[in-house]
Image 1 (tube, rainbow, N blue to C red):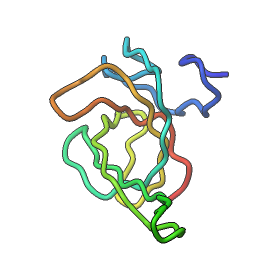
Image 2: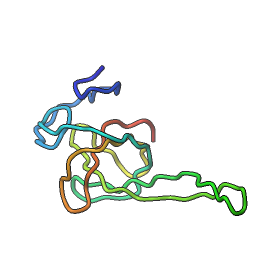
Image 3: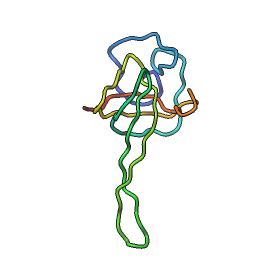
Image 4: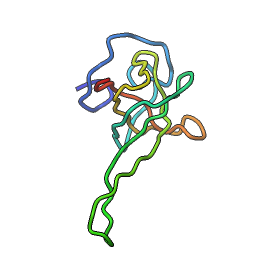
Length: 106
């Protein structure tokens, strides 16, 4: 169990970011989502989430995708193509309400 209340791997590096859930004061809550980093600038990255949606009319699944803006703390530093786990937090800006908590692959 890590310091944020869920079972994720702690980052090896340390940082002085106030918006880091591990080394700062940011509290995380709510939804946990997984996706792939498709872009970003500064400390914000864009995560693409692929999922299946069931169409009742055709009785089949269709592929859908959505993109989420998330804060990228310096201790995690996810790059393009990395698979990450993000968790909901308080609104950090107009579009950012998630923070990267773990790199799961890449």
